[in-house]
Image 1 (spheres, one colour):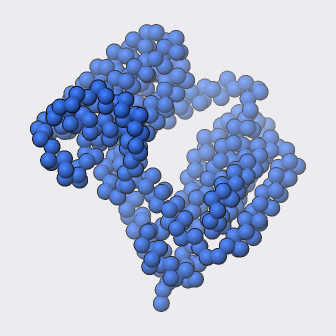
Image 2 (cartoon, helix red, strand yellow):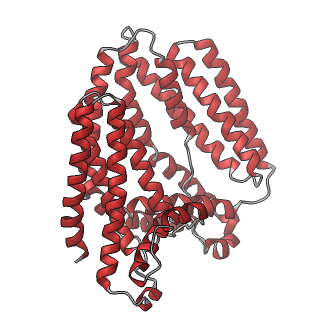
Image 3 (cartoon, helix red, strand yellow):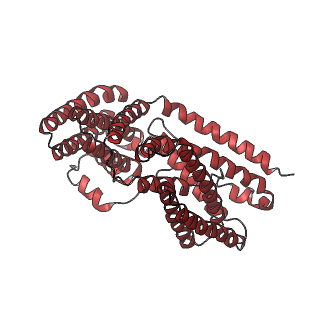
Length: 404
């Protein structure tokens, strides 16, 4: 007899074991040191900003938006896999215990978001409302937990709906309501908070009623959502270790491919120059990561007031970006057709180092220009020279040794 509770325990055990395998690489990687440095820097300037907080600062709006988004983000991790669409779908009527456990698991693993946001926004709350006690903030967090549970159930019910537009509309309405509820709660407007909460309850009950009208479980959607989140984790873990389960998404981006390959001479020795350029452009995991680090680093550099810290951050993000782009070299490791290239292995290593140099130089120049926007002209010169020197030393030393 099929026992869905036992099936869930086995699936959860395998899932945790697989995640733990990659978490060891992530927690021991270079990223942890960088994140610790960034968080420490942010904490220092956050404390200074709170000391100079203006009286008209929109604290209720800031906390309301962040609390509302955290409450709205309530995905259900079902741990389903593609073969389940064939082998488990026949036991749909016996899966109630399995899905109940997935709801509990989904809520527990999302508690860290509430703890992080509560710890981060607590100082802002007490700096803006010094007359309020800690018990009031704890009561607000209790409301956050309740609304979070409500959104989790609503999301689960709406996963039975096959019309994507209805699901998006429902999610949008609940996000607006969640933000509005916490905006009024932080402001202390009990009446308006109660009215918006009542509207949320109506939407909550309607979602339950509407889901009951749906026939069966939308297995395809559940598997698609879970696999999408799992692939997102694999893409993150791929920064630290090779992930064989990662499904590479490729996009044409024809105009961008033409832009980066037009200058590549048509010779055998340039085969890998061409290959690595189109791989960088067409594979979302590289170009997306590169531009995300570029934007995040640029924002940090722009808003940090200290010149030397701007320079350090520019080199820090340059290191992060170059370190992540190194995986380009192993991107085609399972493609046997590359062995047919009439090109020496030394040309392959030269090509990867060349594109790393080019990407790091572009990033160095852009970070230096961001420093110019803050009118730190000495910092511009130091960041430009320091970034170029770091790129040369890191790529010619560390990267070259890793390739060999």
